[in-house]
Image (cartoon, rainbow over all chains, first blue to last red):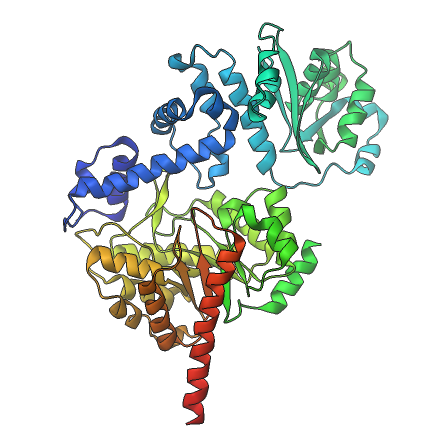
Length: 264
Length: 283
């Protein structure tokens, strides 16, 4: 008799990898062959996860069609089965998978659309967190402000794409063929801010320098480095906008350039 | 505010001995607008682990109805132990919603850290019983409350099972103090699949010390409850008395009115059960 741990590993491998023999020998065969019974669970596994991927990638699903989507999902699911039981969090690796999936090569913007949809999905399901208390920030001495590192709200994402994936995403979801036909695929790269506001998830285009500044802040760079990374922007105004929109939920002070010099 | 809802929830105590329905996203707004005549609502915990709109709706609905959080992802039967990250996310939702009930399944879903997206049947062994009890204990400790555990429906049985499912579940309840969420439809499905007699299963649950911790559930997934299951439900009421009852519909979600109608049918059978007790006391 196997231990429960050995037994569950065998069943898991049957469901994920189709290796039925080790699990099948533990099944009472009354009526249906064991492989058929295991197949019920395997089919359910694939169908449930495919539905989860489809839910967070509705535009990708429409762009490639149901049959192609299911085929791609099946390969992805076998390669990256979920590590968590909340399926809202499943599929983070799907955009990268699509980027390297050669049958999708005819749609060079597909992975970009998938990245945007993942950011939207993440924003939809991010936990509710109170924005940063500005009074706390106001209490930081002026001399220390450069050393602030902000903690972004979990719904905020900064997305870069080589194609106008926001326009494609909107046109596909609205099933607007005219808008789709009007899109210039060669218009150059775009940069997006995705976030959840009180009214829903918003996708906004940013100019490249403003995006670079926001991306540095959201990547936990101290303020002085974010400013140095985007010298052409009005950092004070942009930062005030980010704070007013509640895009940060906390901050800490790290060693700044002057302190570092003193230490070295 | 959420603290207000939590305080009310604490006063409300368990779900009433009346009929409730499963609530899904498409019915959120209709429930708030129409305030249907159902006694309580059950949602899938895993759909409310984040923030944003779903949780905001649930908080609003929670002000008007007792809510039950019914989980599908804890994997109480996993030999490798619980996913503590998942349990912590469940804890946060439980603290925010202050539900009347928290339930999970007698099944397993996780092996080698991979979620198998199903409620898989356990081998009914002494080892599995010990593991389930350990995981239920841990869950109840972290959530700081009793949970209810539901009997699964299964498409297969394992050769090395030695304990009848109903005895296994009763033992989990006895050892951990958890309650039983007795899904009548699952009993019917498993009985059909494995050649059990559904009445034997119900008889296995007639342990009196479980008084007050039992809820009946009729999960007919994607269609009206079939006559055989209504019969089994009536038999369960005869055995357990009028207990809280839930009508759930997982797939092919119908209009809210259809669910309310099914709940009314269960409510009528609950009234019947109450009347029988009153008659017996009068005699």
